[in-house]
Image (cartoon, rainbow, N blue to C red; front, side, top):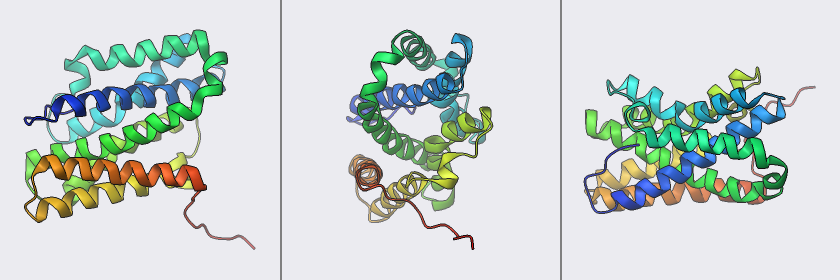
Length: 210
């Protein structure tokens, strides 16, 4: 959700929209699983689709893009409505949306890090925070809304994929590489790790109870 001022902005915007839709699908699916009505589905789809980006913008002193550009809320609302009417048909194709979700994770991670880069410069911690809150903030809000422990804390290599993509983005920038290349490299890294984690069922280690 950032206005890139270089030639790849159109490509990034398309991925941004796809990521927003994919995240909205996960929000709507969660709402449906908890027997929510259509209003609840629309709310959760929107919270997941734009919640992370809106939180990031507020933290960095920006008016949330999702509130100034109606495209984002339109996409999440439209996704919620489609899920309400066609969920029984779409649920067999959720693997496709999981791929979009992985792409969205990569894109949102680097979008958030890029905004931090624009605001504070090449400073790792703000870039890490901006990227990760954009990528996983909506999912955390989704799970808290239905009184579940956020899935990124208990299962799946998700936040780690975002974290790694942002590190790669930062390191590439420190070598003076063009921001276009750094962005694409970070997106591919985060998305690739997430896809591999889904393919091979990777999870982080936990404490084994006796």
